Length: 285
Image (cartoon, rainbow, N blue to C red):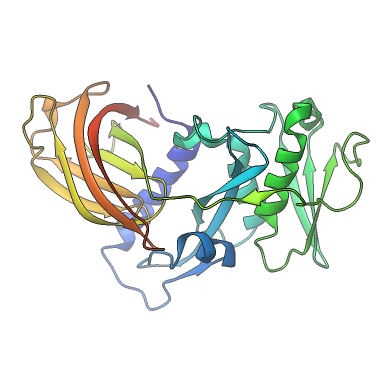
């Protein structure tokens, strides 16, 4: 199994973060939206560059009138509203939360541009947006509106499809009436990955969480019960434990590893757990 496009993008940031950790730069800082701070607390630090901590909002599978915040990070200096909304359109399946969240966007829909002027953001989509399920229309609009309204320069949001205001969508600004943003709850483990790439450290494994966390305790074992010896460290904006095993040949994609963890997020929400996790293959050769 190969992991999704979103996680590949995260790994690009991962290698940037690794490089940043080995040097110091006085200009390093993280700019977090108020939405990020409200849902996830203080953002993690970076050692180089200017990083932006943002939030994407995804409808709950069990109740699409409710949105769950998910953190997104970028070093992009421009086009951040379009970037984060584009990531939301990839859907929760891109980072392993498709059982609890849903993607209201049609698969073929393309976000052409998010144009911002005088506080109004107009999200321009391709014609395929109108292939949306009618019962998910409001969930889709709420996801668009809530995601874009976190930006200080945006006060109102509208949608255009193929250069026109679609007749089937409500006129005027997107309304968030009747939409609730829920607390994300305690942090969770998303996925365990085996990184097989031409430039990857042999046997490198990554265990991803759904948000930045402080790791209080973490253990990984082979299926037969032996601890995985090697170097352990956190990276990817504190959203992953990275393991460089001493004996990389003992594990391969599809095998299960035993994990136990104790973590806490930036708002003080704690979680602990244990269990066997299959190693999904992460490769972008």
